[in-house]
Each structure stands twice: as C-alpha cells, then as structure tokens.
Length: 87
Image (cartoon, rainbow, N blue to C red; front, side, top):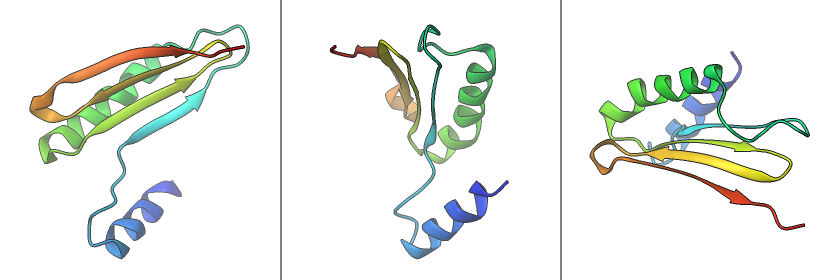
C-alpha cells in the first residue's frame, strides 16, 4: 500500500524516466530460488500491466545457493535464468 505513492512520486520527479519495473525478494536457507505459484501470479500481473505500455519488467529471487531472475519487454520476449553464488 505504501509503494504505489512512492513510485508515482519518483515518476513525477523524473518526468517519467524512472518507473516501477518489478519485484525482488529472498527465500530462506534450504528453499530453492525458484518462483512459487504466488510469484508466478505476481509476474503475470507485471506482464498484464507493464507489457502493453512497453515497460520492461523483472522479477528476481535471491536464495542461499543462487539467484533466479526473469525479465520481459513486450515484443522483445522474456529471458529467464539463474546465477550460482560462489562460496
């Protein structure tokens, strides 16, 4: 509830150059850095609302052993992958 006004404030202050593009969070130790059903719902929401406006969208999940990401940008498609953390 507190995020929307802050994002709007940033967009106004930067003449629309800075926009909200996505979500990130971490998973606890032992839980893979992969999207849950809830995470998939959030990404679907990003696609529904940001894709038509041509705004890139991204979701990142940081885990104990790796970081997972998915990004999309309208006609450019989607990219998904993970980066292993070095010990």
